Length: 389
Image 1: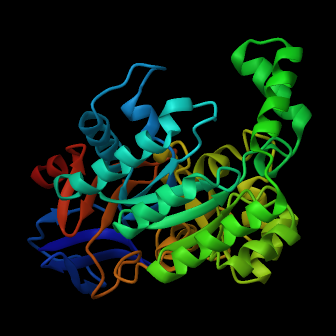
Image 2: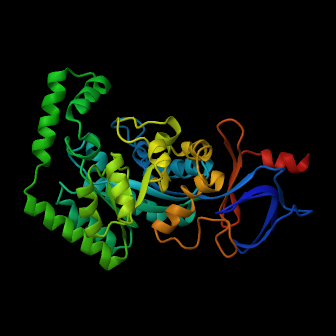
Image 3: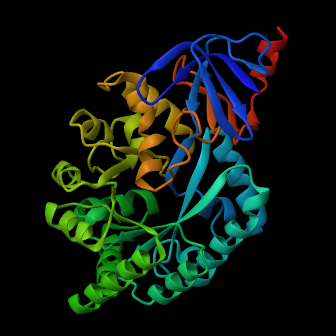
């Protein structure tokens, strides 16, 4: 099958009117010219590698769209699958949490999160996107260790991130700002918000020796089972160094420029949210992804909580990227694939998986079709109409 007459975005350059031949789900040939009689003709649209999303928070809202209104897991996971395909994501890591006393309560209980993970894995062959599991491990909940170790033993977890959402740490290091956010979003008084934050700090406080033992245990389990390890919300160079020593290869969502610089210096790939990059600011007042990009310390774009932001974020960052569109595209394709050990995807190159995003780059950009392993998993119909015309 030939896919022809596209602006083909390679890892290092753009072929202006190129073509790609697909055989058995792999890229077999790349041509520098348009090919007559192609099965898919692009009329100069963009052909990008399929997006590799290492962190997407959407699964909880899909399985429970309103508080205490659960839907069947199968329905929620199918909805999520389609939503990701429409956004151009061909490989997705569902970021799930084990935080039973968090704001999300039962949604992040050990039992509920384990059920989501097992359902996602069992449904894998029926779904459009290649779904993987990113388990966020709150280091202040050591009881989750045995649960996660069991899931890793089943082969159900592909990535672990070490998180600490205690107020005063990481993403919530500014306690006053966190209190004000609760007042604004939950409609409670300032005193009620302050008391809630104080209770969270008390509930999550663990002796240093307990946290050290927990970190060492989860790190050893990841090494023994070949599971990738990431840190989360690094706020100081010292924390980056600790995470690196534990075996982390990725620093996701560093909250300060100093932490991002240290991560890069220590060889960790830095990941930030596409919504942050698109908007130009973090919603929680932390490091801007655009600033990190401008400083040369941004390696990976993740959907975070809004998958359709990936393409517009790439197009926005391409305006300032030293390598232009290919450089910005690598943030959501080749770079995460490398960081996660996925050597079979992430770029348009002979021998790689035929995972593509067909996109229009006018305005904020629009995904026209998504292809995985050479098969179309989403189309808005425009490609068919173009060819017929």
